[in-house]
Image (cartoon, rainbow, N blue to C red):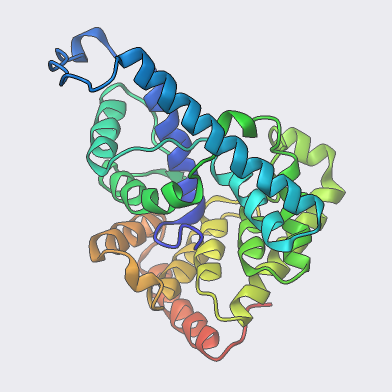
Length: 297
């Protein structure tokens, strides 16, 4: 799966936000006294060294295996590695309770939350999205040392494009998220406008194909694209329509009712009453088209 339980682009932004909060130095006053540790069965230094070596070996083994398979032309490996490069660069294992504590600490410290449709995400929505998306991140990034991915970002689009052209739906979906990986910002994208335009057309075509194949996650990705760009111009009405259509699918029903409610509320912040009616009508039509196996042009 591809973080099917959380808004995909917003989830990615939230992961970056969470990583930044966790690496920031904590205020001295907020540091509680450490509890007395349980007696270890092996010396602490030896245990830490053993755990570090095991993780390093697992990471090296998985990465080496993927690199070998990619070199041999394995489409599944291309899709997997391209997605890992994109999604795991900011990954850290963290419990649901620690997510909530970290978000609270970050907000208290004045760290700016990620945006959705140009508006800051509420703390509750941020917590719920991170908590629901974390298990999928844990599965996808297991055995990967994110430090190994720092110099690989430019590879993600090409790997995903090759896999998507070969028919991998996972790569089609991931490509829409990471088609512009490696660009440092708007200035670099403008300087490479022809290539950016080509990638946008590719990403749109992949999402249409994913919808034709019946993958509802493409609806959410389109909603995210209209909410945050850069694949589409930001359009809160369309963002709401596609997200709402996604929620009408079985995949969307996997979201908790509260998470669905808060997500749509966030998208509706910039809509007036008439626009909200139109967005809901659009959502109903998009949902009917999806069920009929047709995709937007």
